[in-house]
Length: 150
Image (cartoon, rainbow, N blue to C red):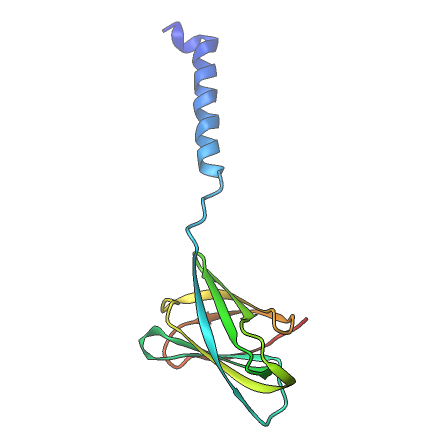
């Protein structure tokens, strides 16, 4: 019984307590991220360009993103989608650069890589330097329109 009254016993108890506390309070490792590139279908329109992103949840878990862009005829735009645990980052990037004057185009992309659940989104445009954040639940019929800012 002298062992339970010794300094070594209390030292061992303190080491075990600090190790347990370290394991409980240590940051959790983030899950792996997955990335996919989706091309936008662009077509000229006769409307002024608005700085909004329209998101619509479709059947089968697909999401449609619509966006008006001020680009040249022949320009291509791609969406780089990176999905983390419950966060999705979408970056709009130019692909092929066309010629001529810039004009209003409607870009649409169909994403099938997002699950049917709630995610926090960050949408960035390298085409015009604007961005926005929003939350969206991918359930059939859900729609959201978000204003982008500089």
